[in-house]
Amino acid sequence: MVNNLSPKTASPPPPRHIAIIMDGNGRWAKARGLPRVAGHQRGADAVRGVVEACQDLGISYLTLYAFSSENWKRPPAEVDDLMGLLRVYLRRELRELHRSGVRVRFIGNWSVLAKDIVDLIEDAERTTRHNTGLTLIIAVNYGSHNEILGAVRRIAEQVGTGRLKVEDIDDAVFAHHLNTDGIPDPDLIVRTSGEKRLSNFLLWQAAYAELLFTDLLWPDFNRQSLEEVVDEFHRRDRRYGATSG
Image (cartoon, rainbow, N blue to C red; front, side, top):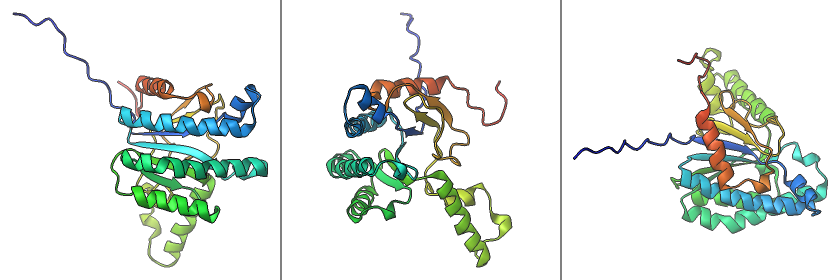
């Protein structure tokens, strides 16, 4: 008996690391006549769905740009709302994240935040540090310029004290002094809301990342949206400076 069934085509592996600039909460709320905080609340709900989808798709790292170092320029009431949502998210989601094997890490200068938020951040990192599932990286009070300058200062200090030679400084040494030490560079950076810029996000790490900009506002970004950006990623030809073919 002849088997005429063709072998099943294996699905390509998902990107190892996706980073997302979550943009559009305010516009989502304004379009519905709601206060901006309602958009941020809906955006926090979207985070849960995307984290679950990343786990199901086998993505190893997800970085979310939650609060930039420039976001302090927003009205104080909105900043308070964002910090309140961060508190709520960490208190509400940590148990489920831990149960599902997610490791939580934070990047940025979060040590200057309110003490109760710092305590929540430290507890999240400590509780989940041995988990081996998805690594969820949350960028809070993060700015790539500050991150790079901090790395330069730390390296310069080591050179000045003789612990490091100038000729030994290379990409790996520099990356070791960034907030993302131990985290692979993103394969794909997604920005929602139609804006087409990185806004001081992972500038060193984005050197060879694929960039994808979608008009969807972040509160509308869901599992299907994530699957679509992964499909688009698979259509890209990543050459890392080499020629194809």
